Figure 1 (cartoon, rainbow, N blue to C red):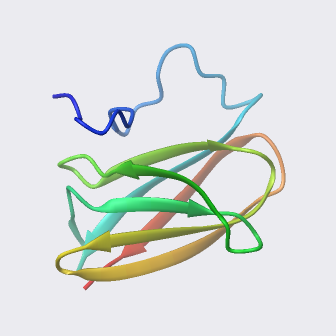
Figure 2 (cartoon, rainbow, N blue to C red):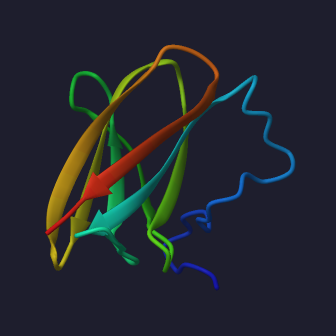
Figure 3 (tube, rainbow, N blue to C red):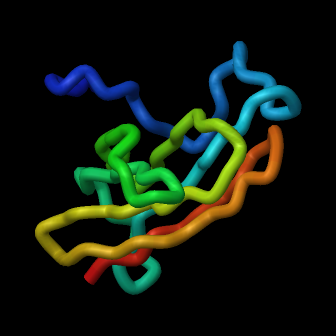
Length: 102
């Protein structure tokens, strides 16, 4: 499945060439009442609220961003509603985040 916007395909497993011990990976899921939400626009905002990146959640609600260490806001926009969550990534590793919409 490819995206016409050029956003990377999302999934729950990290690509083989990614070393979570050396990179900051924000890995998450968009949900509505605990049910995964696909097709949500997921935006990454830096600590000042500035837009940094956007992906579309997979059919299972999965999304992933590669980021620098710091405090981030992840915002999901979907026809069922909008939501956001914050994550503090002080250093390399896999940082999990769930965003609830609806």
